[in-house]
Amino acid sequence: MSEQTSTGRYLTEAMRQKLNELAPRYPTKQALTLPALHLVQDRYRCIPPEAIVEIAEFLELAPAQVLDTMTFYGSFFRTPDAPLGQFRIWVCRSLPCSLCGGEELLHKVCHRFGVEPGGTSQDGKVTVEPAECLGACELAPCVWVNGEVVKVTTDADLDQLYERLQAGAIGESAQ
Amino acid sequence: MTRDYEPVLLANLGVPDSHRLDVYRSRGGYQAIEKALRQHTPEEVVELVVQSKLRGRGGAGFPCGMKWKFLPKDRTVTYLCVNADESEPGTFNNRILMENDPHQVLEGIMIAAYATRAQTAYIYIRYEYVRAHRILQQAIQEAYDAGLLGRNILGTEFSLDIYLHRGAGAYICGEETGLIESLEGKRGWPRTKPPYPAVEGVFRKPTVVNNVETLCCVKHILDRGVDWFLSIGVPADPNNPRDLGSYGPKLYCVSGHVNRPGCYELPLGVPCRELIEDYAGGVRNGKGVKAVIPGGLSMGFLRADELDTPLDFSSLQKVGCLGLGTAAVVVFDEDTSIVDILHRSCRFFAHESCGQCTPCREGTAWMYRILNRIRNGEAEPSDLEILLEIADSIGIIPGTTICGLADGAAWPVKTAVRKFREEFEEYIRTRKGVTVG
Ligand SMILES: Cc1cc2nc3c(=O)[nH]c(=O)nc-3n(C[C@H](O)[C@H](O)[C@H](O)COP(=O)(O)O)c2cc1C
Ligand code: SF4
Ligand code: FES
Image (cartoon, rainbow over the protein chains, first blue to last red):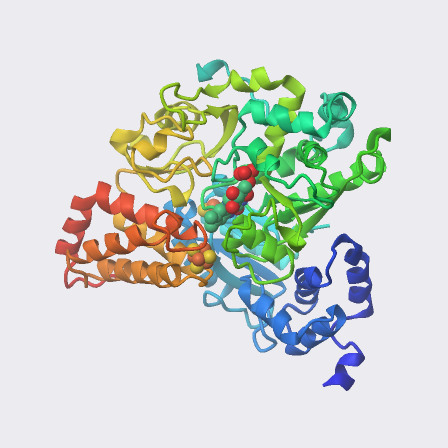
């Protein structure tokens, strides 16, 4: 275990540097757990078990502590055998959206991209998951695609979503 | 009365480039922090906020100034945690503020940090708010570059760093001690209180947790004065010494079956009916109202005959709701099935319970199972009693759980079953033996 991890297979130099930049913001290293998990997941579209060990080593924690944190949060929980697609689509089905057709929308989106709820398309491009309120209820019914929220009411809206996604022209950057 | 109300919190909405520092400044921005730093001691700012009777906008309605006063006098380190986890179904006002007027949010944070002597503020922002994250990050950078953040702000002794910290998709991290645990890098399990965060919060240091909208109100209290704030909203009932009043502006989010869903700024106490009809454009397709969630899902339901209830901190309890909550109003038209609504509510809370307290973990799962039974035509009328018994026994109010999530899970059940009992009974009777998907 130690041999492989000491070379830092998953936690790249750039990630380590980023975490070192963030470190002075917090009085403990453990506070970097979520930032580290985000970096790993953004890059690999999953959290490989080896990365857990590497994060733990880097933050001077027990792997069990990192694992415990990771499994608590809905955004993670992706293992290498079921990584996220390049685009993650969350279809909101909380009450305000479901009143405007959110439940049906989940099925329509799944159908359009040829996946089951929670599944990823064969080409690894799209993962579609049900979600709770995205904080954009004025756009109900809506979906979240890599950070961008889109209102999808008509079939034309769905076609447009599909086209934009195929063209890679969708999503928001956090930075 | 509400007709002539001029928005304050949303005053910059729609102004081109409202997110930019120069635009914010050209519209009077960062004068409130100047005033605080040059004219007031931190204690005086706390006193102003106490006098304004500002109550927290994040859901609990706790008096903001009083919370700040709970900080121990002899503290050396203080943290400010800004709660931008906004996950209560139906709620999106924090997002609107952060995306459109990020400097207003930062100025509120700066004033609160000055008042509480915090030198570090963390904005805990929900994972899904990617755009708000980017816009805030840019605004923070602009503020540093302009000497509004960092060391010796505006040439004074005051120093402050503001950091954004992204959540990872858990409703419970909006609960203030769940947020604190999450910020520390742990699972978001709420802590037993006491100790309260003011005494022992993040990294075991005295901590203030405030909602984004609360902090925006603080900015305007400094700008316009305490009397201005007290002139808006609903005064405390003089015959009820426990009524703390509902002062100031509020951002009401309206969604569901209305013609114009959106975020509306109005004085606290606007009647629910007025909000729906005059602002949100009434119910779609000319239909009638079946029920309304007045303050985010956790608060329970209003019936159509209760729509004249003012949306303030004390009136909603009188009609059986938990409170004002986040003032997120969700409207259901007359054709909506109350059973379907409650089914979705129970699904949400069963999914979001953190599992730490047995009554909440088991209770929310049981309630969801019973709702599934009802929808599958497998329930007996007596199941309604079981449902109510569970709902009445989980939460902080009956004293069985660590945090208020359980109360929020229970209130939709209690109000739906008690206010729409006949519909539930009828549904159970007619669905018996009929299976639905
Ligand atoms: C289950 C649960 C979820 C909560 N979610 C939020 C939230 O997303 N945002 C928020 O500001 N407060 C939320 N709160 C309330 C916070 O615990 C806390 O009262 C609030 O952040 C304090 O800020 P305020 O006094 O400025 O309102 C939640 C409470 C509970 C019990
Ligand atoms: S009440 Fe529920 S959500 Fe809150 S701490 Fe207990 S189990 Fe967790
Ligand atoms: S319910 Fe879908 S965004 Fe709020």
